[in-house]
Length: 237
Image (cartoon, rainbow, N blue to C red; front, side, top):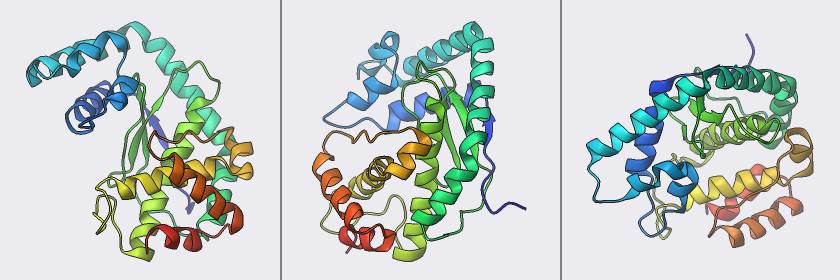
């Protein structure tokens, strides 16, 4: 039995409906809706309006997702098959590189599921080991960037819990509620800017707005000493 996760790529319309409903309901920043506008297609921007009832929002989401999947199902199927093939070409090298980054830390057990999504951002669920990816994208092999990024999150938070006693949504005294999330995203950005990773995945760091200073500092630290424990201790003292 392989010690590395085997990702199953799936099409699940109901899952993508739930994906959007959850994102709209829980992940809306209080002062900045940029995430929502990145996530939604323009035809659904109107559902961000607070005056619209939750029932109407849910119905609009359901209708849009079902209509889109019906219209593009063949394209989506081909895209999912291609995403699966593209991932298989790099997965061994990817896991070998992650072993170096995380000092051969064992991957958390579970059935890893990658769900096709028609939306513009790709959430994950650390506990239940699933995430979303774009089956259709103008950039070739873009799905590999998403898969690799989300898989880093799974092992990152498992490493954090085992070595630092910190869970994904824990609050750190004296820090903002989003601090641990920011650290996790910036860490991924730093690794995406690391030449061995970038060469394999073809990715480049794209820090979230507001994390640029953290990214620059963490990048300097990683260049100085490529050691996960050294790096995390700088941010989780």
